[in-house]
Image (cartoon, rainbow, N blue to C red; front, side, top):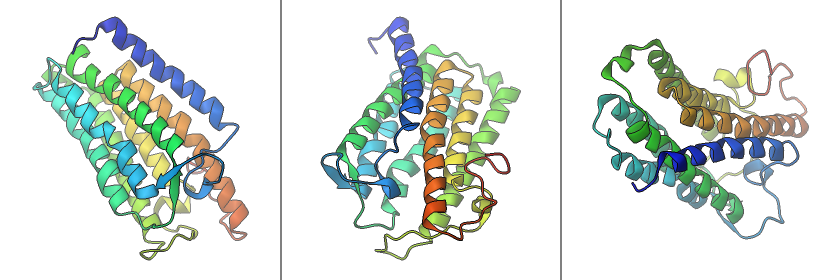
Length: 253
């Protein structure tokens, strides 16, 4: 690709800056989709199509940029590619196709912002692992890689278990909300967000890179405030909502 280390570094710093901006913005308002959807945010798209559209760059843009790198056939970068695609093929295709909703919609503005972020994030991380980063085969036994893969796998399992429990709350065609039960839902309101945060903290550790840290930081900046909004919504909507449940971290917050 005809980019330079300086351009790449600027893109990585931009992603870090977006994390700060996102955190500050979400302290004052809740992104208007899902249970927090509301009027006044312009044109909307069906929720299922919106998810398919906005998450797909994380699969195809990432793959295209990865394949342009000089280290695309090296063993360690191929492991990173596999883990990334395991998450995002599920998130961009399987998850929306299994959604049990027919009426909900998402503002086009939210979709456009997500597409732009996913393109930037795909560039920053794919370019690092296949071009600017350097990983010998011995990295596979490095404690940072082992810990990172373990956290990524744990986070993926938590995320998918929580998604499945939420999906089972509804019959096909239903759009109403109920109090989720079982698994980590007995301890926190948003184990699906906890799982995703753990995945990308694991990614940051196993890639041991500023690119990975930028994504992990953005994930926390985006999902932690939304988890707090979900928790408030549950408590306001359901008078019998379990009082012992925390927001995101069991027994802590």
